[in-house]
Image 1 (cartoon, rainbow, N blue to C red):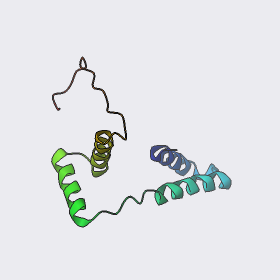
Image 2: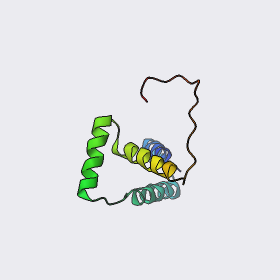
Image 3: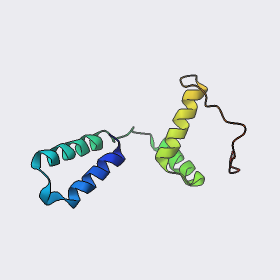
Image 4: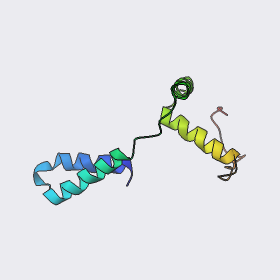
Length: 96
């Protein structure tokens, strides 16, 4: 399950909390707790953290989006992932 689907499930449960069977509520809450436990992230050194936050601000994207981009590009560059092919005939919005 994704975070979004768990969040939606929690919202639905909150909307009908009085009608929600206790075992179903327990399952939903345990899934949410598990998801939260697994979000801890990777501890970074302060200079690395500062650089990421600064670059993310300059690019006007979220820090996690920047980390995904950097990691994907590093994996592609070092042949751990296949390089994505760009469709030459596709329209672009001018940001290369």
